[in-house]
Structure formats: C-alpha cells, structure tokens
Image 1 (cartoon, rainbow, N blue to C red):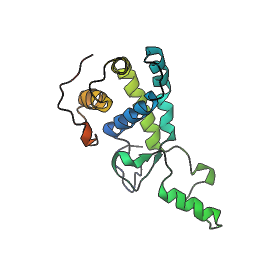
Image 2: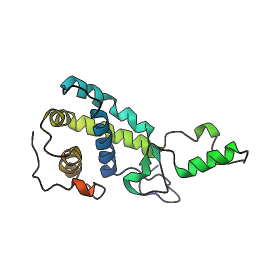
Image 3: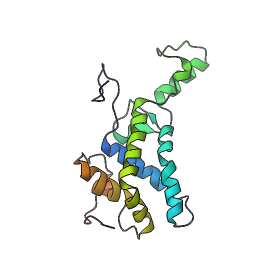
Image 4: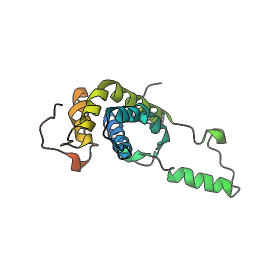
Length: 169
C-alpha cells in the first residue's frame, strides 16, 4: 500500500512532516509545563514517553491540516455512536470494537515522533535547559526538522514566524 495523497482508492492521508513536527512541538510544550525542575533527567524521561501520547490522537477526515489530528472524537463518530446508542443499526463495514482503533495516519504520526527524537533528542534537551529565546516550534520544526528535509512549512503557526537567525546551541 502506498501512502500518497488521500483519494477514493487510497483513503489514507499521512501526516506531513510539518503536521508531525507541529503536533510533536505541542505535545512537548504541554508536557514540559508539568516538569517541576529544569533537569536533564526529567526532560529525558518525558521525551522517552512522548511518542506514546500520539496514540491519543484521532483523525478527523472532515478537517484539513494539523486540525485533522485531535484528541477529541470526530463529530461524525460522535453522531454514529449516538445513533447506535439510540438503537439505530449503523454499519461501517468493520466490527464495532474496531471503531476506535488507531488509524494508519496516527501510527505514522507516532513513527515521525520517534524519528524526531532519534535525530534531535540532544538538541531538544539543550533547548529545554537553555534560556529559550526562540519558540520551540521555530527551534525544532522551522530551523531543524523541516529545514533539514527541505519540507513544506506552510502548516506552521503564523505567530511562530520568526525573523530571528537560526539558534545553534
């Protein structure tokens, strides 16, 4: 199976490098707010577990861009489950216990998370322990992960567009 663009024949629309990095950056920032001491060991522990949190995302095929990945259940699935609970027979072409299975897109999101950690773990730790004079999204996504791949950066937050030069730690 090829993971190209989403079509009728290929319903899988994999996360772009940009989407993957932005979601990683959001997860990292959310988790670092729970770190009480600015220590290397604490941030390393957090980084080692961050990719598992990708499995809490669900794909929202009705949305585009980064917004199609959310921890909330899609409106479509909410409606289908409500109909089922009201006694309506709902046939999705797969067993009911598979309705909440992790999609291919989310599995690919986790793989990209692991790739980011494999390539940039040391730099991420250095950023965390530094003065952080640049946003994490800019530091990791714009200046490293996407730049190194010459990947599209259009999904990056408009507020994160930095005029600052690349920060080398």
